[in-house]
Amino acid sequence: MKAIVILLSSILLSGAAAAQGAGVGNGAILGKVEKEAGQLPLNHIQLIGSHNSYKQAIDPALFQMLKQTSGVLAYGLEYSHVSIIEQLNRGLANLEIDIYADAKGGKYAHPKGLDWVKNQAGEYDPEKQMMEPGFKIFHVQEIDFRSHYLTLKHCLRDLRKWSEEHPDHNPVFITMNAKDDEIRKEGFTIPEKFTAEVLDELDRVILYELGQENLIVPDQVRGSYGTLEHAVLKQNWPKLSEAKGKFILILDETDAKRNAYIQGHPSLKGRVLFANAEPGTPEAAIVIMNDPNKDQAKIQELVKKGYIIRTRADADTKQARKNDRSQFEAACESGAQIITTDYYQKSTHFVSDYQVSFDGNQYFRLNPLLTK
Image 1 (tube, rainbow, N blue to C red):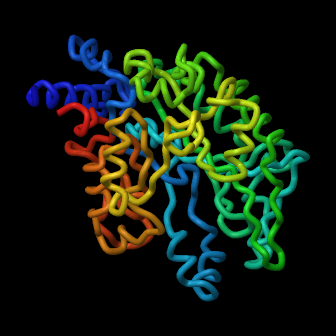
Image 2 (cartoon, rainbow, N blue to C red):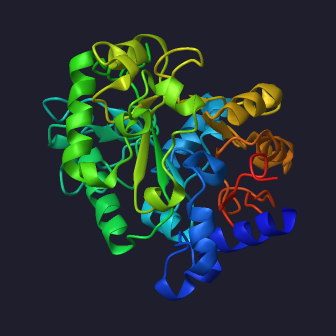
Image 3 (cartoon, one colour):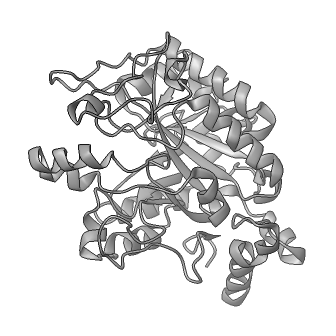
Protein backbone atom coordinates (compact mmCIF):
# COMPACT_ATOMS: atom_id res chain seq x y z
CA MET A 1 0.00 0.00 0.00
CA LYS A 2 2.79 2.43 0.88
CA ALA A 3 4.40 1.94 -2.54
CA ILE A 4 1.08 2.69 -4.24
CA VAL A 5 0.64 5.85 -2.22
CA ILE A 6 4.15 7.02 -3.14
CA LEU A 7 3.49 6.31 -6.81
CA LEU A 8 0.13 8.10 -6.74
CA SER A 9 1.59 11.02 -4.89
CA SER A 10 4.61 11.41 -7.16
CA ILE A 11 2.49 11.50 -10.30
CA LEU A 12 -0.42 13.47 -8.86
CA LEU A 13 1.88 16.14 -7.56
CA SER A 14 4.57 16.21 -10.20
CA GLY A 15 3.03 19.35 -11.59
CA ALA A 16 6.33 20.90 -12.59
CA ALA A 17 7.56 17.83 -14.46
CA ALA A 18 4.28 16.45 -15.74
CA ALA A 19 2.95 19.75 -16.98
CA GLN A 20 6.16 21.41 -18.06
CA GLY A 21 5.22 21.12 -21.68
CA ALA A 22 1.95 22.92 -20.95
CA GLY A 23 3.85 25.72 -19.25
CA VAL A 24 2.12 25.41 -15.89
CA GLY A 25 3.33 23.86 -12.65
CA ASN A 26 -0.17 23.27 -11.27
CA GLY A 27 -0.68 20.35 -13.60
CA ALA A 28 -3.28 17.70 -14.23
CA ILE A 29 -3.22 14.14 -12.89
CA LEU A 30 -2.19 11.70 -15.59
CA GLY A 31 -3.10 8.30 -17.01
CA LYS A 32 -4.30 5.30 -15.00
CA VAL A 33 -3.05 6.87 -11.77
CA GLU A 34 -5.25 9.89 -12.50
CA LYS A 35 -8.32 7.68 -12.26
CA GLU A 36 -7.21 6.08 -8.99
CA ALA A 37 -6.13 9.31 -7.29
CA GLY A 38 -9.11 11.13 -8.73
CA GLN A 39 -11.44 8.95 -6.69
CA LEU A 40 -9.97 10.24 -3.44
CA PRO A 41 -11.92 13.04 -1.72
CA LEU A 42 -10.65 16.60 -1.81
CA ASN A 43 -9.52 16.54 1.83
CA HIS A 44 -6.96 13.79 1.06
CA ILE A 45 -4.45 16.25 -0.37
CA GLN A 46 -1.76 18.45 1.14
CA LEU A 47 -0.59 21.59 -0.60
CA ILE A 48 1.59 24.65 -0.20
CA GLY A 49 0.41 28.13 -1.02
CA SER A 50 1.39 31.71 -0.38
CA HIS A 51 0.51 34.11 2.42
CA ASN A 52 -0.59 37.61 1.36
CA SER A 53 -0.19 36.42 -2.20
CA TYR A 54 -0.76 39.84 -3.78
CA LYS A 55 1.99 41.65 -1.84
CA GLN A 56 4.67 43.70 -3.51
CA ALA A 57 7.60 45.19 -1.62
CA ILE A 58 6.97 48.35 0.37
CA ASP A 59 8.10 51.53 -1.35
CA PRO A 60 11.89 51.61 -0.62
CA ALA A 61 11.95 55.10 0.86
CA LEU A 62 8.91 54.34 2.99
CA PHE A 63 10.48 51.11 4.19
CA GLN A 64 13.60 52.95 5.31
CA MET A 65 11.41 55.37 7.26
CA LEU A 66 9.58 52.46 8.89
CA LYS A 67 12.89 50.85 9.88
CA GLN A 68 13.90 54.04 11.67
CA THR A 69 10.58 54.55 13.44
CA SER A 70 9.40 50.96 13.99
CA GLY A 71 12.08 48.41 13.25
CA VAL A 72 10.19 45.34 14.47
CA LEU A 73 7.16 46.20 12.33
CA ALA A 74 9.33 46.91 9.31
CA TYR A 75 11.23 43.63 9.51
CA GLY A 76 7.96 41.70 9.75
CA LEU A 77 6.80 43.32 6.51
CA GLU A 78 10.03 42.74 4.60
CA TYR A 79 8.79 40.20 2.06
CA SER A 80 7.06 40.20 -1.30
CA HIS A 81 5.76 37.83 -3.97
CA VAL A 82 6.02 37.22 -7.67
CA SER A 83 2.75 37.73 -9.52
CA ILE A 84 -0.21 35.57 -8.57
CA ILE A 85 -0.30 34.03 -12.04
CA GLU A 86 3.37 33.08 -11.77
CA GLN A 87 2.66 31.51 -8.39
CA LEU A 88 -0.09 29.38 -9.93
CA ASN A 89 2.16 28.42 -12.81
CA ARG A 90 4.78 27.26 -10.30
CA GLY A 91 2.20 24.93 -8.76
CA LEU A 92 1.16 26.81 -5.62
CA ALA A 93 -2.43 25.89 -4.85
CA ASN A 94 -3.48 28.33 -2.15
CA LEU A 95 -3.73 32.09 -2.39
CA GLU A 96 -4.43 34.58 0.37
CA ILE A 97 -6.05 37.91 -0.46
CA ASP A 98 -6.74 40.81 1.90
CA ILE A 99 -9.70 42.92 0.86
CA TYR A 100 -10.98 46.33 1.97
CA ALA A 101 -14.47 47.62 1.26
CA ASP A 102 -14.67 50.83 -0.74
CA ALA A 103 -18.28 51.33 -1.79
CA LYS A 104 -17.86 54.74 -3.41
CA GLY A 105 -14.27 54.40 -4.63
CA GLY A 106 -11.29 56.62 -3.93
CA LYS A 107 -11.00 55.88 -0.22
CA TYR A 108 -7.47 54.48 -0.60
CA ALA A 109 -6.48 56.24 -3.83
CA HIS A 110 -3.62 58.24 -2.31
CA PRO A 111 -1.78 56.38 0.47
CA LYS A 112 -0.36 58.80 2.99
CA GLY A 113 2.96 56.97 2.97
CA LEU A 114 3.67 58.46 -0.43
CA ASP A 115 3.40 61.93 1.06
CA TRP A 116 5.49 61.03 4.09
CA VAL A 117 8.44 60.21 1.83
CA LYS A 118 7.57 62.86 -0.77
CA ASN A 119 6.79 60.28 -3.44
CA GLN A 120 4.33 60.67 -6.32
CA ALA A 121 1.01 58.80 -6.46
CA GLY A 122 1.13 58.53 -10.24
CA GLU A 123 3.45 55.51 -10.35
CA TYR A 124 1.37 53.78 -7.70
CA ASP A 125 -1.93 53.73 -9.63
CA PRO A 126 -1.52 55.22 -13.10
CA GLU A 127 -4.82 53.69 -14.32
CA LYS A 128 -6.76 55.16 -11.38
CA GLN A 129 -8.19 51.78 -10.43
CA MET A 130 -8.39 52.86 -6.79
CA MET A 131 -10.96 55.47 -7.78
CA GLU A 132 -13.38 52.74 -8.90
CA PRO A 133 -16.09 51.60 -6.45
CA GLY A 134 -15.55 48.11 -5.11
CA PHE A 135 -13.24 45.94 -3.02
CA LYS A 136 -9.56 46.83 -2.92
CA ILE A 137 -6.53 44.61 -2.27
CA PHE A 138 -3.60 45.62 -0.09
CA HIS A 139 -2.03 44.76 3.27
CA VAL A 140 -1.96 47.79 5.57
CA GLN A 141 -3.45 51.19 4.82
CA GLU A 142 -0.99 54.01 4.17
CA ILE A 143 2.21 51.94 4.57
CA ASP A 144 1.97 48.48 2.93
CA PHE A 145 -0.26 49.24 -0.04
CA ARG A 146 1.65 48.03 -3.08
CA SER A 147 -0.12 45.07 -4.66
CA HIS A 148 -0.02 43.02 -7.86
CA TYR A 149 -3.77 43.71 -8.00
CA LEU A 150 -5.35 46.87 -6.65
CA THR A 151 -8.96 45.72 -7.08
CA LEU A 152 -10.60 42.40 -6.35
CA LYS A 153 -12.51 42.32 -9.61
CA HIS A 154 -9.34 42.59 -11.72
CA CYS A 155 -7.73 39.83 -9.66
CA LEU A 156 -10.70 37.50 -10.05
CA ARG A 157 -10.90 38.14 -13.78
CA ASP A 158 -7.29 37.09 -14.24
CA LEU A 159 -7.83 34.01 -12.07
CA ARG A 160 -10.80 32.98 -14.21
CA LYS A 161 -8.83 33.53 -17.41
CA TRP A 162 -5.92 31.48 -16.08
CA SER A 163 -8.27 28.70 -15.00
CA GLU A 164 -9.97 28.58 -18.39
CA GLU A 165 -6.56 28.35 -20.05
CA HIS A 166 -5.63 25.43 -17.73
CA PRO A 167 -8.94 23.59 -17.22
CA ASP A 168 -7.30 20.53 -15.60
CA HIS A 169 -5.46 22.50 -12.92
CA ASN A 170 -5.42 21.18 -9.38
CA PRO A 171 -8.06 22.75 -7.11
CA VAL A 172 -6.98 26.17 -5.85
CA PHE A 173 -7.96 27.43 -2.39
CA ILE A 174 -8.29 31.16 -1.76
CA THR A 175 -8.47 32.50 1.79
CA MET A 176 -9.83 36.01 2.19
CA ASN A 177 -9.34 38.42 5.06
CA ALA A 178 -12.09 41.05 5.26
CA LYS A 179 -9.98 43.85 6.70
CA ASP A 180 -11.52 46.73 8.61
CA ASP A 181 -9.15 47.18 11.55
CA GLU A 182 -8.56 50.78 12.56
CA ILE A 183 -5.09 52.19 13.10
CA ARG A 184 -5.63 54.99 15.59
CA LYS A 185 -2.80 57.22 14.42
CA GLU A 186 -2.88 60.53 12.64
CA GLY A 187 -3.18 60.21 8.87
CA PHE A 188 -4.44 56.60 8.77
CA THR A 189 -7.68 56.02 6.85
CA ILE A 190 -10.49 54.41 8.85
CA PRO A 191 -11.74 51.40 6.86
CA GLU A 192 -15.38 50.67 6.08
CA LYS A 193 -16.87 47.93 8.24
CA PHE A 194 -17.71 44.51 6.83
CA THR A 195 -21.40 44.30 7.63
CA ALA A 196 -23.71 41.51 6.47
CA GLU A 197 -24.65 43.68 3.49
CA VAL A 198 -21.02 44.20 2.49
CA LEU A 199 -20.40 40.46 2.77
CA ASP A 200 -23.45 39.84 0.57
CA GLU A 201 -21.83 42.11 -2.02
CA LEU A 202 -18.61 40.13 -1.72
CA ASP A 203 -20.50 36.95 -2.63
CA ARG A 204 -22.06 38.67 -5.63
CA VAL A 205 -18.72 39.93 -6.93
CA ILE A 206 -17.08 36.51 -6.62
CA LEU A 207 -19.95 34.75 -8.37
CA TYR A 208 -20.02 37.31 -11.17
CA GLU A 209 -16.28 37.36 -11.80
CA LEU A 210 -15.36 33.69 -11.26
CA GLY A 211 -18.62 32.03 -12.27
CA GLN A 212 -20.62 29.50 -10.25
CA GLU A 213 -19.41 26.69 -12.49
CA ASN A 214 -15.81 27.32 -11.47
CA LEU A 215 -16.42 27.13 -7.72
CA ILE A 216 -16.87 24.52 -5.02
CA VAL A 217 -19.28 26.07 -2.51
CA PRO A 218 -20.70 24.89 0.83
CA ASP A 219 -24.01 23.78 -0.72
CA GLN A 220 -22.18 21.25 -2.90
CA VAL A 221 -20.35 19.73 0.04
CA ARG A 222 -23.39 19.69 2.31
CA GLY A 223 -25.53 17.90 -0.31
CA SER A 224 -28.45 16.12 1.32
CA TYR A 225 -26.95 16.12 4.82
CA GLY A 226 -28.62 18.14 7.54
CA THR A 227 -25.61 20.37 8.18
CA LEU A 228 -22.35 21.19 6.46
CA GLU A 229 -20.38 19.75 9.36
CA HIS A 230 -22.32 16.47 9.21
CA ALA A 231 -21.44 16.17 5.52
CA VAL A 232 -17.77 16.81 6.26
CA LEU A 233 -17.70 14.21 9.03
CA LYS A 234 -19.24 11.77 6.55
CA GLN A 235 -16.43 12.50 4.06
CA ASN A 236 -18.74 14.16 1.56
CA TRP A 237 -16.03 16.33 0.01
CA PRO A 238 -15.97 16.23 -3.81
CA LYS A 239 -13.57 13.79 -5.41
CA LEU A 240 -10.29 15.16 -6.73
CA SER A 241 -11.45 14.43 -10.27
CA GLU A 242 -14.50 16.64 -9.64
CA ALA A 243 -12.41 19.41 -8.09
CA LYS A 244 -10.05 19.88 -11.03
CA GLY A 245 -10.34 23.35 -12.51
CA LYS A 246 -12.19 24.70 -9.44
CA PHE A 247 -11.65 27.35 -6.78
CA ILE A 248 -12.59 26.97 -3.10
CA LEU A 249 -12.85 30.23 -1.13
CA ILE A 250 -12.62 30.66 2.64
CA LEU A 251 -13.50 33.67 4.79
CA ASP A 252 -10.63 33.85 7.27
CA GLU A 253 -12.48 35.73 9.99
CA THR A 254 -13.91 35.03 13.43
CA ASP A 255 -16.41 36.61 15.82
CA ALA A 256 -18.51 39.48 14.44
CA LYS A 257 -17.55 39.18 10.77
CA ARG A 258 -17.93 35.42 10.76
CA ASN A 259 -21.29 35.74 12.54
CA ALA A 260 -22.43 38.34 10.01
CA TYR A 261 -21.56 36.00 7.17
CA ILE A 262 -23.38 33.05 8.72
CA GLN A 263 -26.45 35.04 9.84
CA GLY A 264 -29.46 34.02 7.77
CA HIS A 265 -27.43 31.25 6.12
CA PRO A 266 -27.39 28.26 8.50
CA SER A 267 -24.81 25.70 7.42
CA LEU A 268 -23.72 28.40 4.95
CA LYS A 269 -26.70 27.72 2.70
CA GLY A 270 -26.48 29.92 -0.36
CA ARG A 271 -23.06 31.27 0.59
CA VAL A 272 -20.01 31.32 -1.70
CA LEU A 273 -17.20 31.14 0.84
CA PHE A 274 -16.60 28.57 3.52
CA ALA A 275 -16.26 30.11 6.98
CA ASN A 276 -13.53 29.58 9.54
CA ALA A 277 -16.17 28.01 11.78
CA GLU A 278 -15.48 26.24 15.04
CA PRO A 279 -15.66 22.42 14.99
CA GLY A 280 -18.92 21.37 16.59
CA THR A 281 -20.95 24.06 14.81
CA PRO A 282 -23.17 23.44 11.75
CA GLU A 283 -20.94 25.56 9.51
CA ALA A 284 -17.64 23.83 10.34
CA ALA A 285 -15.74 22.45 7.35
CA ILE A 286 -12.50 24.41 6.84
CA VAL A 287 -10.65 25.60 9.94
CA ILE A 288 -7.74 28.04 10.28
CA MET A 289 -5.11 26.91 12.83
CA ASN A 290 -1.90 28.82 12.28
CA ASP A 291 0.43 27.27 14.86
CA PRO A 292 1.23 23.66 13.93
CA ASN A 293 3.82 23.42 16.69
CA LYS A 294 1.33 24.15 19.44
CA ASP A 295 -1.72 22.57 17.80
CA GLN A 296 -0.26 19.60 15.95
CA ALA A 297 -2.23 16.94 17.87
CA LYS A 298 -5.50 18.88 17.50
CA ILE A 299 -4.90 19.43 13.80
CA GLN A 300 -4.24 15.74 13.28
CA GLU A 301 -7.43 14.88 15.15
CA LEU A 302 -9.54 17.23 13.03
CA VAL A 303 -7.94 16.16 9.74
CA LYS A 304 -8.68 12.51 10.50
CA LYS A 305 -12.31 13.40 11.22
CA GLY A 306 -12.73 15.00 7.81
CA TYR A 307 -12.12 18.72 8.26
CA ILE A 308 -9.77 20.68 6.02
CA ILE A 309 -7.22 22.68 8.02
CA ARG A 310 -5.16 25.71 6.94
CA THR A 311 -1.92 26.36 8.83
CA ARG A 312 1.31 28.32 8.34
CA ALA A 313 4.93 27.35 7.78
CA ASP A 314 6.27 30.77 8.74
CA ALA A 315 5.23 34.26 9.77
CA ASP A 316 6.63 37.79 10.00
CA THR A 317 9.93 36.71 8.32
CA LYS A 318 11.07 35.09 11.59
CA GLN A 319 11.66 31.56 10.30
CA ALA A 320 13.38 32.81 7.16
CA ARG A 321 15.80 35.01 9.10
CA LYS A 322 16.80 32.04 11.27
CA ASN A 323 16.57 29.45 8.46
CA ASP A 324 14.27 27.52 10.80
CA ARG A 325 12.16 24.84 9.07
CA SER A 326 10.73 23.33 12.25
CA GLN A 327 7.31 24.96 11.90
CA PHE A 328 7.04 23.82 8.28
CA GLU A 329 7.99 20.30 9.29
CA ALA A 330 5.38 20.37 12.05
CA ALA A 331 2.81 21.59 9.52
CA CYS A 332 3.60 18.70 7.20
CA GLU A 333 3.38 16.16 10.02
CA SER A 334 0.10 17.63 11.27
CA GLY A 335 -1.67 16.61 8.07
CA ALA A 336 -3.07 20.11 7.60
CA GLN A 337 -4.18 20.20 4.00
CA ILE A 338 -3.18 23.81 3.35
CA ILE A 339 0.24 25.16 4.37
CA THR A 340 1.01 28.79 3.61
CA THR A 341 4.40 30.41 3.32
CA ASP A 342 6.11 33.61 2.21
CA TYR A 343 9.06 31.55 0.97
CA TYR A 344 8.32 29.17 -1.90
CA GLN A 345 11.47 30.87 -3.13
CA LYS A 346 14.36 32.31 -1.13
CA SER A 347 14.04 35.83 0.19
CA THR A 348 14.96 38.59 -2.22
CA HIS A 349 15.21 41.07 0.67
CA PHE A 350 17.84 39.51 2.95
CA VAL A 351 20.27 36.60 2.78
CA SER A 352 18.69 33.30 3.80
CA ASP A 353 18.57 29.73 2.54
CA TYR A 354 15.07 29.27 3.92
CA GLN A 355 12.69 27.90 1.29
CA VAL A 356 9.56 25.74 1.50
CA SER A 357 8.46 22.86 -0.71
CA PHE A 358 7.70 19.16 -0.52
CA ASP A 359 10.23 16.60 -1.77
CA GLY A 360 11.10 17.09 -5.40
CA ASN A 361 10.39 20.82 -5.24
CA GLN A 362 6.66 20.13 -5.35
CA TYR A 363 3.77 22.06 -3.78
CA PHE A 364 0.92 19.54 -4.04
CA ARG A 365 0.76 15.93 -2.88
CA LEU A 366 -1.47 13.29 -1.40
CA ASN A 367 -1.90 13.80 2.33
CA PRO A 368 0.48 11.39 4.12
CA LEU A 369 -1.69 11.40 7.24
CA LEU A 370 -4.71 10.08 5.31
CA THR A 371 -3.09 7.89 2.66
CA LYS A 372 -0.73 5.70 4.67
